[in-house]
Every structure is written in structure tokens, then in C-alpha cells.
Image (cartoon, rainbow, N blue to C red):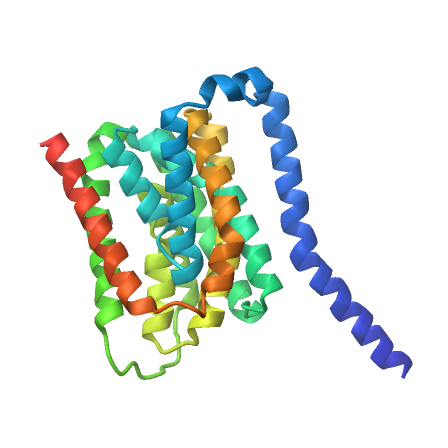
Length: 295
């Protein structure tokens, strides 16, 4: 009896950690950001930035998080495609997406935990390799790669991601297979996510779903792991590139945090295939618009 009580207490403590760690990290991050950038976070700073552009970024945040929360992919690809098409520079776009994702993925992870959508074993397999990949990619984009040079390549990369999403949606009769090389998949997904401003979901989620894994637990687990990936890349962007585009960041954060619980609730209640095709087509159109501007 005493042994069972200890096991139950240990399990209860572990459950609290799944909620406590994201909450502590997010509160700590918000405190640091407000302390270091108090002018932007003041009421006057907020009101000054509240205009038509802010509403555009807010709407992008809502839409991108609804896509990500229900499909397990697409936040970075959707928001980056919209931002690039709107004329936001690549480094500002990628930084804004990843700093905002530190909050939106935290809200999404907590929401998926609340609705019981997480496979903790899968999260543990993806976590560390994904973080290492994301830090490497964020460092290269912040300190080594020229954003103007990489912009057309990012647009092409987004088109490739969109094709992957559509292809996975149209695939029939998926046979369940054992997933191998999870670590390599996580490293590649984290790296491309940081460099391209999106890709963790389309690469990792689509691969796992293509192997026949349960959609509910795959989406919830990949979203939960994405919190750590986004947090790592966001901190790296802050350290090496600084933070620019606060109006973009705050708009994406508010829109994403509001939409996160809705996405987690809808994950099993919408038809995935039509939505995946629609999102894929939208990303292709936005990326083609970005390429046409550059050319």
C-alpha cells in the first residue's frame, strides 16, 4: 500500500512538471523581455503600435496557430509565408515567428496536455535532437547567413513543404510502420525550422503520420516537443541577432495564444485532408507571390 502511494505521488509530481516547466519558462521569459524592452511593453508603446499592421499580424497569428493546432504542422510555414508576402525581411520574420512560438507552442503544449493528446515517450525521443538542430539553424541565420540572399531559397523551401503537406493529405491506405531514426528526423526538422522560419511540423508530423501513427497523439506530442525547439531557437536568435519587429512579435503572440486552446480542442473534430490541401495551396500561392516580388 505504501509502495503504491509512493508511485502515485511520483506520477502526480511528473504530471505537475509537464505543466510547471512550460509555465515557469514562459513567465521567466516574459519578465526578462519586459525588463529589457520596457518601452515597447509600456501602455504608450502598445497603443502606438496598435494600428492596421498590428491587426494584420494578429490575424496571421490566429490563423497560423489554428492550422498548427489542428494539423500538427504549418505555424511557421503559414506565418512566414504571410510575413514574407507582406514584405517583412527574412531575419525579422524568422525571429518574430520563433519568439512568438515560444509563447504559442507553450500554450499549445499545455492545451494538448489538458485534452490528453500527448505521448510522453515520443516527446522525449524528439526533444534533445530537435533542440540541437534548432540552435544550430538559428545561429547560422542570425550570425552567418545573409537574409536577403536566402529569401528566395526560403520561398522555394516553403513551396516544397506545401507539396509535402498536400502529398501526405492525398496519400491513401497508410500502413503502420515502425519509425526509425527519430533523432535524425528531429535534428533535421529543428534545423530547417530555424533556418526556414518553419518546417518542424511538416517534416516531423507528416513523416510520423505517414508511418501510420495515431494522428491525435502524434499531433499533440510534436506540438509539445515544439515548445522546447522554439524556446531554444528563440533564445539563440535573441543572443546572436537581437530582437526586431516587436509589432510583428506581439501580434503573432496574442493571436496564437488565443487560438491555441481552440486548435487543441478541434484536433479530432475536423476533416484533416481537405484542410491540409487548402493550407498547402495557400502556402504555395504566398511563396510564389514572394518569389515574383524578388524576381
